[in-house]
Image 1 (cartoon, rainbow, N blue to C red):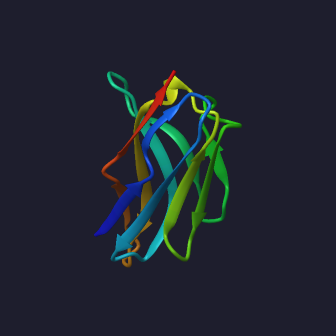
Image 2 (tube, rainbow, N blue to C red):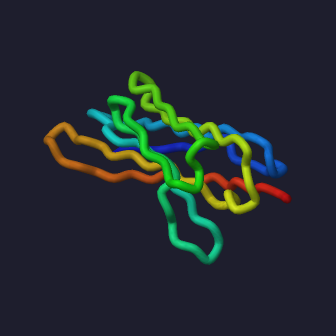
Length: 120
């Protein structure tokens, strides 16, 4: 089992910045893709940004140029630096990890979510 714990959410004014962090712990063999997703009230969960173990990134069009994802493979952490925040970025943000198990299986894990609220 792998546990993901997020931190760093909160309330910020439009134009401000927040940094989200997520730490994985437990019986980890290798975590491949890590990412951030978000879910606003009444909407489906959507991809924000993902990063491979090798550092390749992919962002949703809505956050390109404003958000930066990074990770530390040795510490099994992933972070999301969010700049120029807009009210439409308000959502619960979830950390996700794609885990390769010791017996070559695949497991998908989610954090509990952290609230980000951007006021206008």
